Image (cartoon, rainbow, N blue to C red; front, top):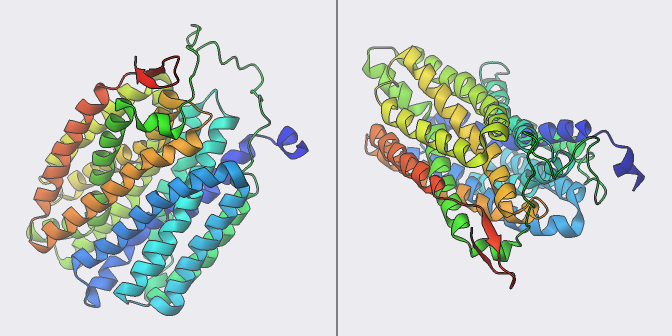
Length: 425
């Protein structure tokens, strides 16, 4: 196709960022929770909508990965824009502050829209940038992290959408913006021609000048039978759970901790909001690029080990940091930075372990770990929050991250025997 032969591959990056900025809507959910709690919602209800969205996001990615091979990435991106935009628009028109309605429109429909589109820029980007898989994946998904800050601030301090127009109209405005951004970014979501390679790139030679091992492509059925998949899945689950719990509580818990130190409710809200919307969100986006770039040098396994180990230690210490403004900012930055790294490291870990060719079909199964973490983390935080014990939630997730670091250290590159069945190297 002439479109594929002549397209500058950096347009793929631009399209990927536009799409991921819109898909990052799910991380902006925390900006709506104070208003919903004011209207009578419990903390566990606010986390339930978030969890439903995360689970639907992960499950719909499996379907999207299979359809990409049939429909192509551009059509899948367009479907994502329509579904996500419709979910938020319907929430604005018919949802209001109704718990069942927002579970359906934001959680189920919105989550599905995110899942349909998320794997597209990852799979397309890896095909166009085989020479920079870690960096380009991190750059592509950075928009997801930065999007959270933009949507939180637009609804709150910068745009004042919630205070000026209310929740319903804010949902509707977001629906229109999400559709427009994904539709535009989706125009560049095409695979390069079969066998295409960047000028000067030799896949047989590593960046250090050594001969590279021949990459073996696993089907999703072969991948699911390997112990490597289980270890990667478990590590991603605990790392995602810790980050997603932190997102849900990054405003509520510090507000309580700061007030316990004598600050007013207004001061505590402003500080906690800054920790979430600026420090956590910026670090979330930067961490995707930084960890992805680092992994091109350090290797995926070492990068994931360091990321989860640092996250575990930070979460354990966070209960002593949340009530002090500057320590809170430091903790939020580290947690956000490491959480963002998940989305650059686990796609490339999947590609390196099970092959780049089928990453669009394989990564959604790995990403189901994000859905499992999306149930465990936020619901744990919400339940313990209702019991008045936010610190225990951070302690549990911190310990789990340390176990995840141990699990990923056990992963070895799999190989296939002549029968085609996978076995450990």
